[in-house]
Length: 97
Image 1 (cartoon, rainbow, N blue to C red):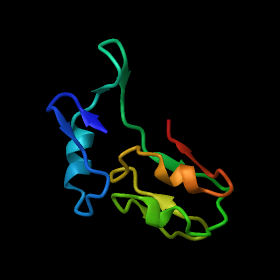
Image 2: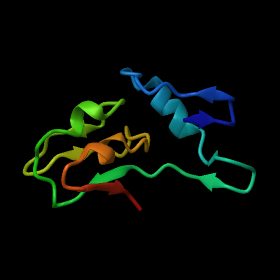
Image 3: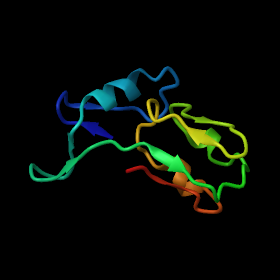
Image 4: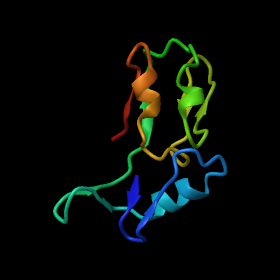
């Protein structure tokens, strides 16, 4: 992940959330050129979640919590990396809108 505004890369394994906050503050981010703007949208877990817990350890900013009956993603912590969606066995995680 790249913050073009400050010229920094946000490490994927920042457990304190400092880089996640920095990353979220630098929106919109420019990806691949001047004409492409991408804003951060927190991922969401839908009702297809089977509460297996596979997603939780994949989150680099600990935004995923066990809920009742499904897991939830804190939109204030999520840095839009998509690692949770990549490992979900039932495809219950997608980018929010």
